[in-house]
Image 1 (cartoon, rainbow, N blue to C red):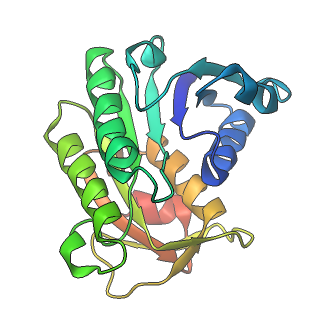
Image 2 (image 1 turned 45 degrees about the horizontal axis):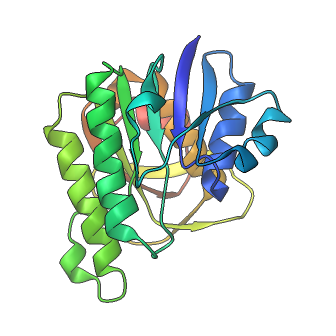
Length: 208
């Protein structure tokens, strides 16, 4: 069983990811939290935690970690400090710890942030983090979903290096896609977009 550090575990999508990992037979989740007060919601479900702040030193958070899912987000408040610099810190720490795979939750539009008026700063931060990951020594997968919603997941998606339209996708299906990317070597050193669709997640990834 592999230890998977979930960065952003306290967020809505991060909680879903952590719970799915806990249910799996392949992975043991370790939730990255900022303080002891955030430990309780995870310890109640027998999920291990490690303390780390993306605005501080994260070097110790990856000790004993096999793989990383980066699902943290500033919510638009600290895009440079969290979405960009925080991600880069985690990438550097993961390199130093010889992490086997780094799965990045990015966003559609991160390849061309200048085309967005409202989200340009956020997408530029995501773009810079993605590019840093691509140039690192890590085995990686970068997943760029459309707009996230809280509907029930269907277990099916549309997936391509570049989709021809924008749209939505459930957090549940995004979480399952991120976890499947941990398993499947077909996603190694690749970047792709996902939306709600008709193809089962495992099949969509394996066919990529």
